[in-house]
Image (cartoon, rainbow, N blue to C red; front, side, top):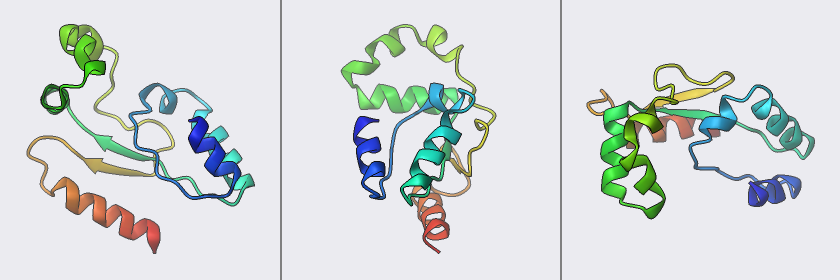
Length: 118
């Protein structure tokens, strides 16, 4: 976030790709970020990538990153805190990343970015 804030404060547009699970579910976090960005002429759009537990497990397992070892070893505990059904408050767009989604992730992403750039 320090890099994001540095770019926002410089008026530079950025894309933040991270779960932001806790942040987006913390009341006031997105409005504070949006206010800070708007003060510098930067727009904020929150996109929720909707996933389900099975899809998340498959992705994390295939990714095989060291940071995920605890999650995989404690899967039930980790996922018990996640809301995979409802987008967090104040989210602007949703992309369906569940296994078997009707439209590919790439096509949904292109369409969302097209809308944002219009």
